Image (tube, rainbow, N blue to C red):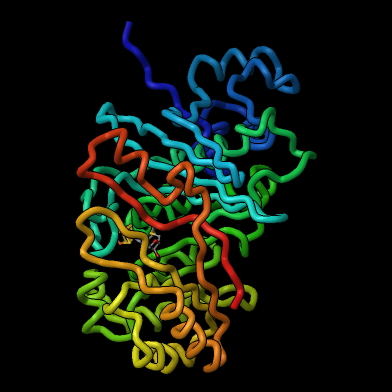
Length: 371
Ligand code: SAH
Ligand code: SF4
């Protein structure tokens, strides 16, 4: 007998789930029922779906499945930060990681979109590992599912275990566009996770044409990994800048904001590297560069990894940079590390688990400290 590959319903966004139900001769509302079972009650089997007829459950059992990604390890830090290593499908032992950072009433989940990354930013260890493969929608939304389920049985009326999602784990989300959009639609959908669009953030190093596509498809919040106040320096740090220089990137940001249904700002991420992009002149240059953009600036002290060639600036230097921008009228936050005892700086354990030369130590945690 040939083994028929079952459809994994975990990764299907509402429209595709409805389409699927219609294609097997079932009514639309069944898709809604099943969606709530999966994403709000954490069902892993059709048996659990007591308001679905036995006959339909048996039919679904035969042709589909609900399969989350395989968890290789889960660690919980003394400060409450949780970190998962997730093995992706495909037999290559490729892993990504997910980190949950609780902070008061908030709990922010940092989600990965690719194994590795093709964009090769000079200071990023995920970039150094090269591109391995894209995650599927089920592997992306599965990270949210796993994080919530780690607190026990899912309860749609209980406390929210994940209040915010940032696509700031491994990979460049806009280079894995459709699966990332599908997963983000689920994050925000009322019959799935129901998160506010202000609390779901996509971070990109600047894949400009995809920013124009993104606003046609969703209205998530946008973070831009800028890291430099001019093209000469950004070309060195973020090679995709050679293809899409800063002026084009900022124009895309303006277009994005202008096409959102509500008033929002862009988050500008700026990883600070000692002696590279952290001097006072560069702070002034950045202040001028961003003057027409509704934005907040998040300074990220560089998180070192072996042979990176970069160091993080002293706290004093970071504060000075922050002050110049704050004096120019910007809201500027500085990220602080969380989950040190479990190496929650992205990739550390994945590196150990796989191959030491692939260590990725991105600095993703993270409570933001207001200036
Ligand atoms: N590819 C996307 C999202 C993942 S990276 C992007 O580049 O935006 C998430 C953030 O971590 C980015 O702002 C990235 O520049 C930053 N980052 C990567 N390596 C880092 C390091 N070693 N130290 C501090 N921040 C880093
Ligand atoms: Fe890729 Fe982002 Fe790392 Fe650049 S910073 S290599 S875009 S993951």
